[in-house]
Length: 256
Image (cartoon, rainbow, N blue to C red):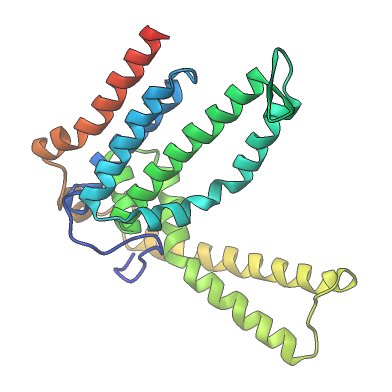
């Protein structure tokens, strides 16, 4: 995986968060998300505390709110589903501007929107401050199952290759007068997808056998394992956010 395979969400901005080792950022994001999910939905103040933590990390990472909000629109389908819950939910109902809304549905909608938004924002901050290579290295250092890191590594490394292959196949098909855009032309498109799958499978098998012949054992190279590994100070610094989130969650559980 070369340096040129940086994902579109990564922001190359020098900051304290960028300089942290990837494994501590991944662990912090996962623990923060677990704390958010474990928080009772009735503890509205707790979600304000989580939002404040996200804002502090975004400021330290030099990631603007506009950038975060624009990319957080990926959760719009879930928001639309949440909007329907107050109308479809059962149980006690309340009146609001002439509408009869389910109380349980309102709580459920708030639960989905609040926790989903915080999880998306935390994931975006991780992606904005960590390259794809560092994400894979961090997962490997955290002893993530080898099969997952292998699949992710090959996918990220050869995604551009497959996209280029698909583009060339489409150009070749169009140059021969076949441009499937309608339902009755779906057969040509399906044939192209099948051919691309076979080419990708054969290419992956050749690459994997070539790597085995060069001593590949299924794990990242040792130089990746050691260079830039997290220090004790980095673990302590990164632990402040999840510890604060766990404290908020525990307080919310006790008070609710």
